[in-house]
Length: 158
Image (cartoon, rainbow, N blue to C red):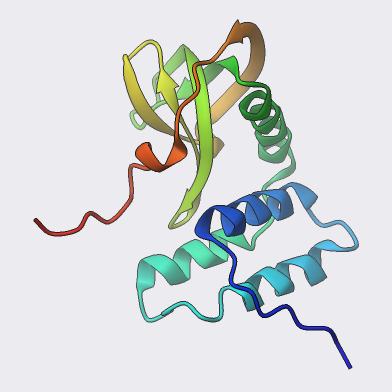
């Protein structure tokens, strides 16, 4: 008889687990781990297309090069260090930016680094597949509460 955990995970815990699984790539435990994550999502209303698509993104491995950059970013989030990224914006223009990383998030088909962009002076979501290069700096990042910086949150009607 299998042990079953009946406690509900928070959204932040599910996102952290999903990002960790994305790093696994195609390792021997990844299939089982992703199946477990899908079970954790079973209580969600998957009639919502955004949630269903995001669930697929959360349980699909990142490409190797993107996963490598994601690990560098995750370490900078933990260490609270500013990152220097080379980023292709939506128009394809390459910029180099210093970013105070806050969190990762998945929305629809993509993973994002959410952080305070020092070049733009505001919070931005950077698609991981558009980050061409990333390196940590020795500059400390200010602490930011992730709950305040999630750009795709559904807002309650006023």
